[in-house]
Length: 171
Image (cartoon, rainbow, N blue to C red; front, side, top):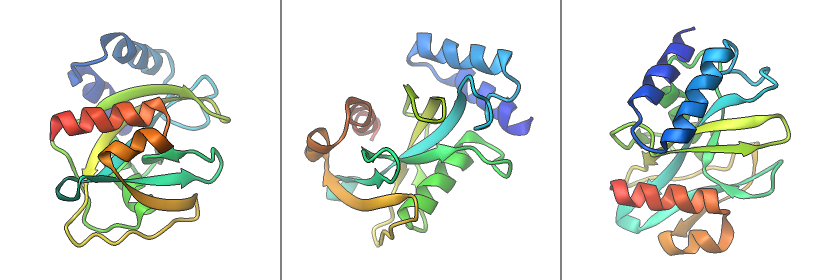
């Protein structure tokens, strides 16, 4: 229940996307299992856009199942105590980069999208890559590649483009 409680607190403190934020909170209110993949009505997920601000670039993964260029992210796990911890864990696992730090200020965006398993109510963070970052592809990815800020729109869908724009605005 700790992760569920953290998600409620994070979402109550998130000040943008009011309608979507309320949808997430209502989902958690009506689904005690709403943090977990097993919740067939949808579940909260956590993701992080890995960024290199001095290099003007972002790291995207070519998702193995969806075959789309996306930020790192996925399902919460029982060992996650907070949404931020889940997002950072996912970003580290999928990028192979040690020493990632989440951008201060909490989530950057929310994005609700349908996937093969269920609706994902994604809480999106941004993670700052260290200067000496070396990425390593994970088993969940077909490819892993750095893209310039302005190249993302050519390879990714609108949700990723919006996340990049929101992240750049926060930097």
